[in-house]
Image (cartoon, one colour):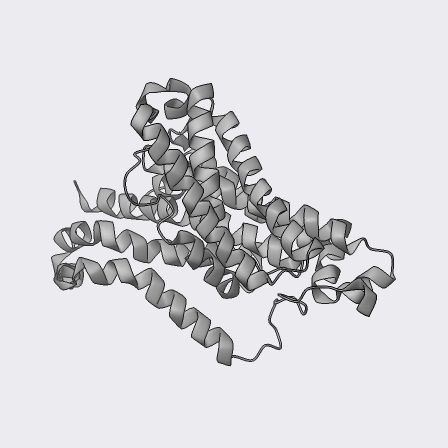
Length: 330
């Protein structure tokens, strides 16, 4: 493989690794803009992954898989909203419990079905073909960047489209601006006639549904091979930190997840880059693979630390994030 092909493959893989993070990050941004802090992203993505994959395969339809993954994630969001919005449960504890609950469902359903006959992705032509790469005419022919950025499966393009759509929705639509008002000061929003509870319910479910699609993408990207480890593999936790990295901006989340995808890709393609460019990148082979595996989490910790000490003047963090709203105390 020539050097240009290696670089192209490297860029292509960065996008492959960053897209599930994009779904999780954008979904969590939508949830947090309502003023709710949901730490259950890992579990929600797992639930969306397992149900989206299984039902999508049985229906032999990628579209059905996406819809089921969204609905499964939204149902988790509905549970979270019922507990935290209606019953005023602690949001941190509820989110952590939802992670445990979601992972439990993932392994319970997966192991139970595996014992009876796991659906192999290669046996379902519409799933396999629907997840194949699609080249964007013209753009995909650009040297180096063409295949790397503009030749991907439909879920990659859908993830970017959702991120851009959510950016527009939050910044330029009336419901989006109302949602931001709810997240900043629910009492003030309530006083001008905004139904705070309805906005919270709808957008928690919407954000969690987006997370569910990200989980489904990860299952498909691993060819649906079910084993002892979860498909999500910590991506949900990274997505929570990336919300801060992206400053609660869905458009910036595209850039932020691309950075994390870069370090994940180094773990897989570092040796190829070292062999293609021994003079400049030969040192990559001397780094233990465990360091590459830990890099995303190390960077996550750095992001969290930096966000705790930086000036919050230009922060996009909602003012009422993580605080339950008691209408009687308005």
